[in-house]
Length: 248
Length: 371
Image (cartoon, rainbow over all chains, first blue to last red; front, side, top):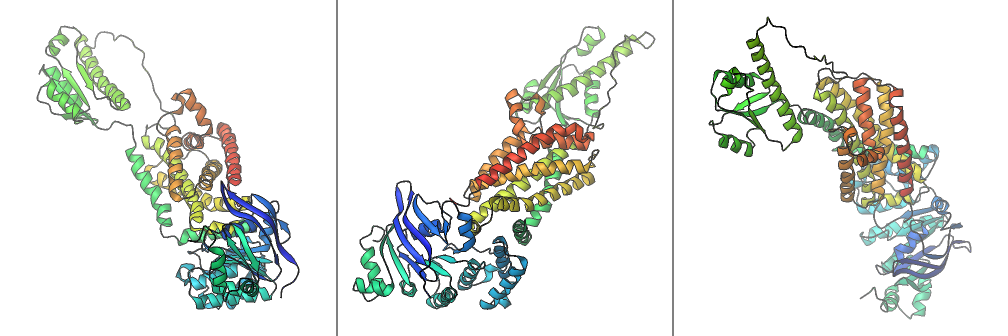
């Protein structure tokens, strides 16, 4: 499933907010079809990096290429080719399932013919056909997250960025969310995900562990465990993060 | 274009699904017009007058009777003491005190110019001046009657200039005909501007704007998509307000409605664009309310709704070149009351169009998809 085709190429990414360095010289590559994880404590700079790659935030310096486009000059081209789902839940509570899908599909510029097909596809794959006219506010959180993920995928992007997509739900719901992630990667989409759940870290193909805005380690979960002589990702993470300021 | 339509459709779904929206759209104009058009008036309908009559003569009582008979005056009793009357003024229970001195009648009859004193509560200068004018005119007409009585009708009257006044555009001098068009301007501005501004910043607060900013949508598409729904609502509001004005206050509609709505259409781009500009620069609904309120107060008070802009100081007149409400206030009254044609208001059309283009450009540029 992984290929050598590079879809994200980041070199020496720096983001400063005043004196505070949120991203300190990040360098990494992400290949087509892989699940790439950003693991880190709160405030480690995961969200900042993901927002820069999605074109929501201006980087301070560094070379950033996403889906083959430059993150300084070609943001709208990047945006046409990526999906994004944030930790801050962002569907319209006062619109129905169908209306939400339709609206986001519409502003991604899908033709009404394609949009019609996509709506049916999404509803049936989410098993939400019976709930298509229910308001988002009436759905359980796990459903909303799955729907938000599907909407982030509505325009069949090359890469989808998920920023702590499963915050606040139980392990079983998280499990079914990850099944969806596997599903899209099997069709060639790259998934870039941030998390601080260790079980999710194990699901990633490759993982970079962030501490205080720096990447402390980057490898597959099994290699990381070997390298740090640990039994679980949890041990690896604690070992690396203990040296950082952001974890007590 | 299709992308803009998707935004408009979504906005309308949300607007009509919101239970507080429809009452706002329909109740606000009715309440505002009913209350303000009746309450915000400079007409003196009821002057409380205290008379301290030291003369107690036939003539002095005749004068009091004249005031009593006038529908504009209510006589507030005093106990024939100036101190008591002044107390009443202090307590705001009377607006003016008329003091008739002793020998008033005697002076009259001896052709010595009789004198009375009028004390007026002038906290509000305008109403004080009106009270003085009304009161003086009653006293003058009384003394003229007496003079004629004494001179007799057989003697040739001294000739004086007589004025034939005809009041144009508002012949009955109805204050509501002046105020209702003004209030309509305020109404559509407030509804349009606040709804637009609050709507955009709400998307910021709940975070949905992020999901829009991550799409390849163009900034102008987003801003125009946000503007059009509230533009339509505000235009509807103007029509609804005019209808109420016509039905309840029978305001004249002498000019072309097409001309009026065309001007309103451009004006609303300014008002709503301003609302979007404010909300682009704010991060919470509270902030938007404060900033929008700040500008609204200044623009409204300087717009000429109560006071003529022509008599404002020069700096204020200069400021009013960028006050959209001032243009619409003037044009709305001109079209409704005077039946002004396009050639009469073309200057204002040009100015408001320049403002519209400027503010829309600013609003689009100020909205940032990337922070």
